[in-house]
Image (tube, rainbow, N blue to C red; front, side, top):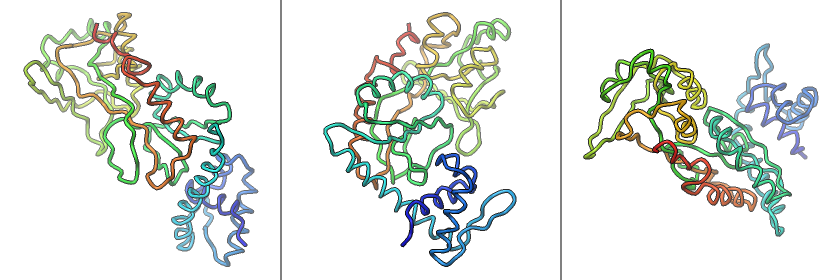
Length: 308
């Protein structure tokens, strides 16, 4: 008989390519992880991993087992979540992944109320600027900003983030204020890299449905919107900032909203979970809570200060 805990240890080692990292994530000693994988190899009668100086390499058998045990363990966790959540109240562990900026400035304001409403739910939050593989990493739900491209995932729309072209007064005093939208091409831009590594285009829509598109070469490229916001505040350059980040600064005069008659396309915000999973009561409660707490004009959708 295989020990499911050993299978769980192997899955984490195979995903992270490290015994030490697997031990840290699972909160067990590295030696326990190594012994568990060794027991699994002995039970199966085949080598699953090759240990090298820098990382763990999977054998052909290890790759095959990893591909299958990810889904197997996910189904086991789902079954446990569903059964433990059959009581009157959601309960158990909830694994959530969100972007760093959204986590600090939006989810952090919502979590205390959710935890107070559901005292039997424990929440593990991962803040990450990368796109998390929900199935492989055992994440129950994530909040994603922008279009959905993965057909294996289900998205529940939470709302919309409006963006605003901003600059710090110190930057405008030093470089001069652009008098027409086309003049932003002569200014320093701060932006995230695109999926293909190329700079993201800035698209503006103006009066009469006129559209202008700029493909600027950023003076500073950063993969996190929270740090972009801070660099714009510091006067490094112009940036297209999310309303929940920049609205208080615009109201306080720390940032200037440039060309308010031109708007940037809004970003859709969605709660996302794997389509292969039966939605547990705990996940369902969290998604419904996010929907009710994220109404227009509330929380992270309250950016009216940016347009005043």
